[in-house]
Image 1: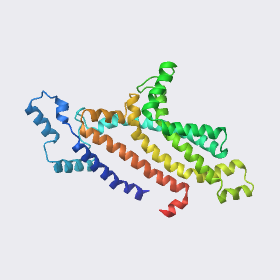
Image 2 (image 1 turned 180 degrees about the vertical axis):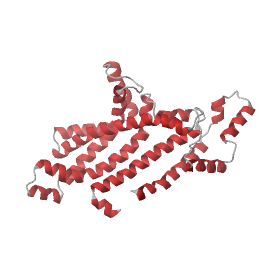
Image 3 (image 1 turned 90 degrees about the vertical axis):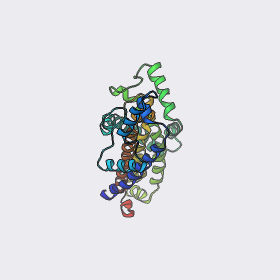
Image 4 (image 1 turned 60 degrees about the vertical axis):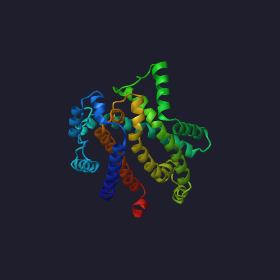
Length: 303
């Protein structure tokens, strides 16, 4: 576990360098965005010096990495507050949405995938294929407005946007979960079909184990190893995918904050948001590897 987490450090360092280089090459002047085009040159120069934007790129990179090593993500140009503080205020909303979407996707995908794997070409299999096709083909920016149109404007059951009670969470969570569920349904079905033909499953049947025990104890344990790995990868992707969903539903999370920061050229805030999302993605993947090794001892031996 410790070795796997240490491997995340160079990955995050590479991401940090890429983010810094990308933002340094993006056209646009954050000082002009902050003060306006009519600002006096002396005021612009003072703000530019205060933010360190008048220094050479190498010095800015060294300062960025030094601050990052100390856990300092800089100061937001727009909010005039530490980036870590601004992100900390928005991060819980993103985690709440990602967790709800993750649980929704699992609750939808696993039963459908198991049903399809047990009865191939049956009614459950056809329903699973329909959900899988819809989840993988329909983008979030199309599904979200469609759900709002049906369940908010036509039926009046759920709120349109914003963050409040559990009702506000339903539509954005379903929108975010549908793509992940589409992938997991197909994978669970295929993995279970393969697992049911494994030698140890046939041996369990020959020994007289009940169908339920064969399925839960022997087949699903093997079939869920790739599902856990892909679900974890998809779970990390939910953090990044929340950018579109949060924007559609005006959800006050980290993704929407990053979109606002990009539009105002708030480079320190953009860097902080990307790094936090990337760190979450890398950490989730590391935990997925550990969990997969727990489920399948052969992966521990391979590592």
